[in-house]
Length: 353
Image (tube, rainbow, N blue to C red; front, side, top):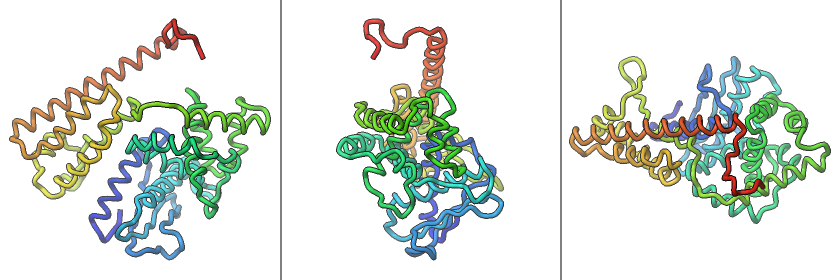
């Protein structure tokens, strides 16, 4: 991160960390890249082009972002710049540097929409309600959506549901991962659909019916805005993990040590930021992780308390966290065992759909 304004750099860094945490699953991100994405915040409303930001693949596979920074810059633009840079970095990792690399517009919009609806899960219900009144574009029109074309709400919402739909159609196979890899490598998107998901249809008409039916199903699906257990685990883990400079290197510090330094401006600002993020997240946490989220919120706000109280709150969080992880693992193991035996995963009195 390079910026003249340290507060701006901190804001974008925090958003980048949130993007990585929330998009690691849908974009199939690795644990890390061999080189980071470099972000440069340029004062003013232009970067030398008509676009508010520009993402470049530089020689050697370095991906960089030049983002025009000004007071009141819409968060949506920051999210789009960061998502586009992640897509291109993923493309470089998969295909190396070549002229065919691509970051499809629909996938960029889908990533931004996924990010927004997972950072504030109530937005998922809002998107679902809005989508009921929108006409989704045909699959080919959505997949071949180009920069500079109209960015209608139907296309933007449709992109989020297309990402959701294609992931679900992949099931336990690597179809979704293979499909993303093909797109980022610059392959024709319709050919990639046929190559990856062709068993679901045999004609162009069947392919379109497949998409429209699936998109309609997902936007009509009534669920509470609750995160999956894995998403809840990743969210709490990221908010509870602190990395600060220690001498010449960065290192992770335990929560109790961080709260002990809460009077230091940098630490105080970071605790406040994480408490605010957790406040948006805690109501939507999976039941396995609800107690851990609540106890982490208490620990993050424990700075004014005596050291014994801070230690007790941090210990409570650690205990709730261990319990949640163990429950999730045990549940997953039990469900996998049932599935391998072919046992039904629904009550016997409920007929299959």
